[in-house]
Length: 149
Image 1 (cartoon, one colour):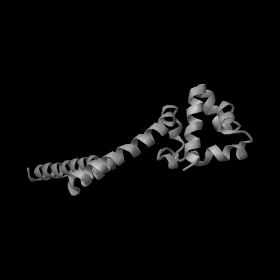
Image 2 (tube, one colour):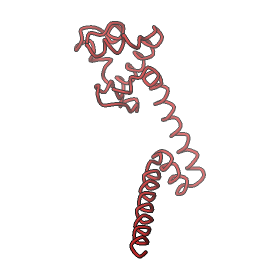
Image 3 (cartoon, rainbow, N blue to C red):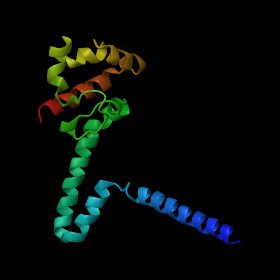
Image 4 (spheres, rainbow, N blue to C red):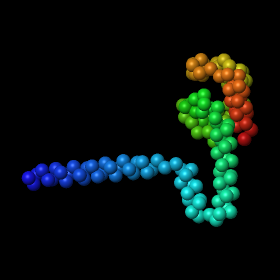
């Protein structure tokens, strides 16, 4: 009987520890933007909060507007565009300077490169996920914007 209750107590302890770890992991996945906003709201006056919120919303809109096409076409699975605040994968290079560097690296402007890539990886990507003229134009414009920052 004593041995069985030791196993029971051990089982409860293990279950408690696992549940604690699980809930700790969930609580640490909090959105940093929300955390920062909550901290800001707790420490700033109402007037300062309004200004900070408007500035934050403007930055988010700029990043998401410029980055929308990269997200839509899946570019962010491999590429980031740090100058546009677009976070993505690290497999491919950061595209912040691509507007200016693609020509020198691939022998054609970025618009032409996106029509017919000269790299094996990008040839496969574009073949599997072709760009419309509008999408290509949007990407080129966003890359131009990034290169000017």
